[in-house]
Image 1 (cartoon, rainbow, N blue to C red):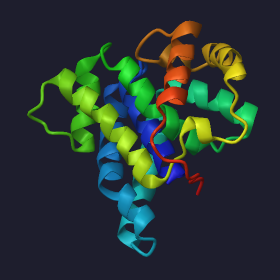
Image 2: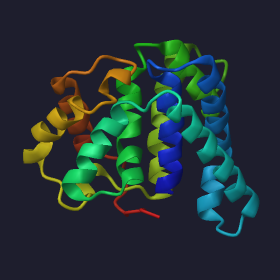
Image 3: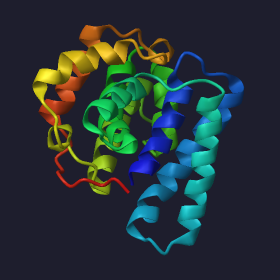
Image 4: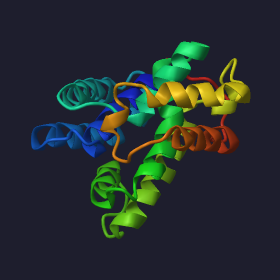
Length: 206
């Protein structure tokens, strides 16, 4: 579950970030479509070899996409949290992906809408509405897969949030985010994730 959400984060950040290119766009969008179609089945039906094979392809394509562009602010936060709490990387990405997607989507609604449509959001929705719907969809996907709420991650302490935000800002991928981020912006996203969570408390680190 967590590694699949990690691959999805790779693809979304490669497509919506500032270093995207026509070459990485195609790989990223196709990876998003494959993940949307196969991740739940791969997790809920362990014997589904076809879904797992499609996830393998999607993960490779997402890796090639961000490897030729960059990841962005979801990873900036997740890497800081991973270092501080030893949180599995995919879990941290899955927790913050919906919140950062919502934070970013008004910066480039067209690109965020394309992600939404690739995820299966109604293609007749206007771009801004589709992007907001995608953020909700990502939250629900994490909940269904058993990704924990941020507040349920072992060791998480609100007293650490300022330091996490500062470490996120100095991450080398900060400048690749769709929207320019300040320490205050990171802190806002972190606090929202802690306050709102995803409505699920089981850790799914596989």
